[in-house]
Image (cartoon, rainbow, N blue to C red; front, side, top):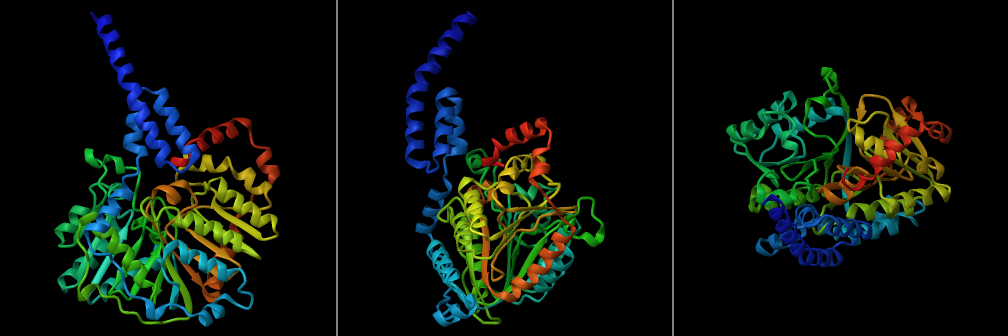
Length: 483
């Protein structure tokens, strides 16, 4: 009896497998732009009857673009007028320096990629560690008069989270419009999650794409990794810093994290507010409008800046193309600081070409990562970095979560994105490009301090590693598209 049931079950699976595999494969061919991803999914679909097609349905189909398109059709477009702040050709030439031949095409490229103007009259201040960033952010929330928009990947229910909760609750009591958006996965890094206590305090809070609800499980791998804080549409904060006590180094936390955040003033804050408003509408259906959410365009500095949104929706590949464009534009020096470094072949080739042209390329990574599998996969490509004339530096603990790119001591890219597939392909990210020698000089001071304490990795060191560790790293690298 059991044998007969198994026979009929196998026949049923075989009869269903062929049409389902054909339909799934057609979808792969039509919608997967990356050839390697298409081949991988097609192989899984055909070699794992029904299971492969099911996995593709849940994890391989990008529903975010369709949902974003539907949302834009159903609701007014979120846009802040910035025409009066758009940089003129003369202002661009001043910011680009005496030899603008490389930066002018880069600015044009990123403008075409993002469809956003390059704005003049901005000032950006680096804030190192939570000991500097959190007080500045809390102070800004405390002085808010009209609106506070806060988006974070991780918002822990710890001492750091409680500080922000208190400041946000006080703002609500003053009549300030407050919106807090937390990624669903990031909200669970501490237990109990902070969302309930935020709501009890009267703070309007939403989760970005809840992933444990069965009909939303397909979005589990697509997270909002952006870190945005906008006060009254006039002051903005962004960078790589989550809200968690590990960033408060002065408190000697159990798991210390060195990170870098930025305070922004000037018209570019409108790009932060636009991005938050689109995310909020995406998550809740509420469009933020009215006097509380009106951005005031006030030039406060001399830097040219532009926000770069990136994600698996309509902004797909914006940052990846930006990185490759910046590497192609570099003439003297490129510095890359990232906690996770797993670029794809195209970005790796761009790094190598820049170095082979004679550009000094410095890649600065933490010696010990907080994600062991990611570090193993990254170590598998370290020989390729060194072999292509790039400098590879490893910084000692505490774990450095900073994210930064500098080109020719004039162009800076800052924000939430790492140099890996998760940031450049799967996550929703936000970065800012900035043309200004003043900020670059401040960041070079920070970078020089990192290099003073760092160890440079040599080809001889990598070649002498035990074969067993190289095999381990190579196996880990196979999962790099999803790490």
